[in-house]
Image (cartoon, rainbow, N blue to C red; front, top):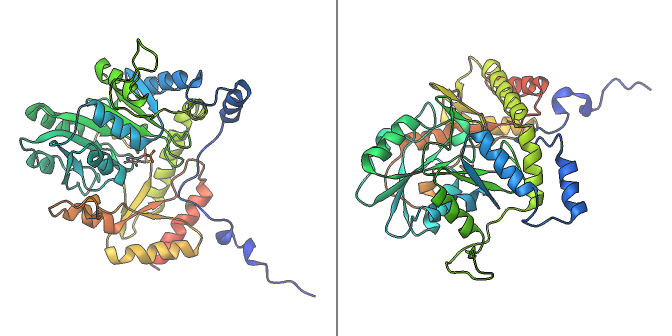
Length: 376
Ligand SMILES: *Cc1c(COP(=O)(O)O)cnc(C)c1O
């Protein structure tokens, strides 16, 4: 009996499913986590918490960092520590992840949405300045998908109008504006270490600030508002937003390979840029004097009607993709006034491709070929 027909599994294009993300858990992760288990320090006290905080601050060029349970509470903690609340307005790009806007709403402040720039995908400085009014208290700059915002313009707006500046760096670990790591331009900045972020702790987050008083408030607010001089005495309404020693153990191990992760991600982005040239789409390339950390490698198709069929075409070949975020002002509980045509267009045309550091050139070639075949 002949067996001339190979089973489909041997067709290279059909082997395995390529996810959008996969954490890069190499190095000392297991060793450090097992240290926690062996020593019993599994809760939010233990040696890894301060080690991770110190190492992280050093990596991103911050004075001090305080760890928290996730990137969402990091944002909430920063906003609370800066005294933002009811009656205040916070200017935020509508094209962002929902957590940025939810945490503004949770403080009682009002998010005021602005449009984005088509090339960088970041908040539009002109629209931002136009949105300033006497109730404006702060600007929330989000470095979306790893490309920095125009920090020169945004810092200048904050100076002119005496506004606080918070940077949501959840997607921008490793990103730089003019040679300076993001998160160092304003009053506070936050990071996320969710499983698909550039470095991960499973769930986790960080707040950085150069102001020791703001840092003191963050530490107190994340730890039930406990008095530093009297046991079990809590004199402000506060939270338990602490990170565990196990999370910090994973984080410290990730930090040790962070440069390797960033270098691999830069290679992935470059391979897509080269591999997708000449198609009716563009990749999300760095604009100006920036380091794009490529949290997500994205394509923006020329015609919005191609977006969903292209995603379906890739899904048929076991290639997972994500659509860009919907503009947050369109979400039922966020409803904001105004028209944001650039954000709407980007949101309708953008796709996040598999973007993880372990992605090999062979897989990228397969993904590029699959994208190319959509237009053939
Ligand atoms: C991931 C993310 C967050 C929230 O972080 P979590 O750790 O998931 O809570 C906030 N803002 C942006 C822009 C994000 O991408």
